[in-house]
Length: 205
Image 1 (tube, rainbow, N blue to C red):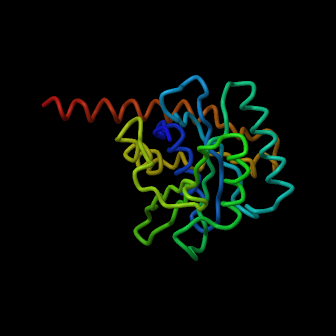
Image 2 (spheres, rainbow, N blue to C red):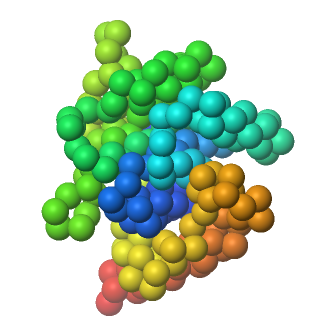
């Protein structure tokens, strides 16, 4: 299996989705750049729902919309994430595993990410891949394009940019809400570049 590398944009959008709804279950999908062959490069993330995350009709509608978006932009759905409101297990839910199986029909290296809310207002990221017929925790699966990405998340959260994130749920409530979050994407990339520059400046001293 190729290495999985998360762009700052993808990981930040997923984290802000979880922070925006800390007491609700949230889910979404990770998009892979099909132009990158040497690794599974997760270039973007689509936050889907923050209530009724396993409602099949709405989920299927959202997935068809995202698939159409992927076809137009040379992307593919490579992973699914879930952040439960009540942590019953350190493993993905049965619904997450079913989604993972559907994703594997089109991309055999599809993965799951279980995002667990902790008491210190932080999240524990637990990636799972399918091995020997079952979904297994794979600690070494997470690789980040920018190792300072969590500083980017913290800065954006501190400035309440997470409140601007729109998931597909928000889009269904009001079709003017942009589930691709184009405007927020620009802010994320700017803050991430600034964070990386500061870190490099510190190391250079």
